[in-house]
Length: 170
Image (cartoon, rainbow, N blue to C red):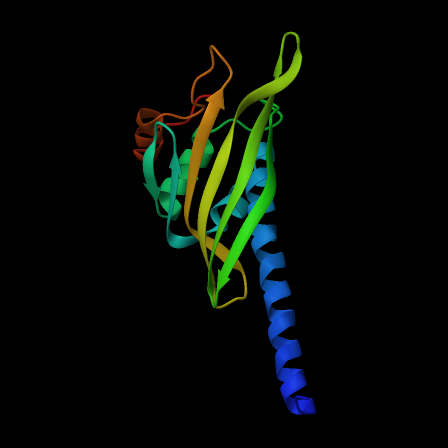
């Protein structure tokens, strides 16, 4: 039987794992809330300074300035109502690094009522930062299906125009 000191060390390690997984979930959930409701600073804070976001049609979006530009080019409530849902996160821990795969769906309003615009999988790489927060080093959105007649919300040319100082539409 382990000593009391060894048991305490094991308990602390288990607690750290639970806390880390909880913080990773916080980052995953913050992304959806921020993009749907226009919480720009919270969105950008999901990434490390040189973090990368890859959406279909945009190519790699790297660093806080570019992430802020793509955020501004995306629609948000109340100008446009939509919901980003994230389900079934599969988190794999490796010390201060982690990967997470989770399924997503985006719900949008249509004339006949709300419906799924697209669904797919997020493939994430995260690190634990000095402040204890877990942030993306990379987020790849793999769109597996899209509602007929719909397109990407943000394209590379829009991202480049916003990065260059143009005001986003909407």
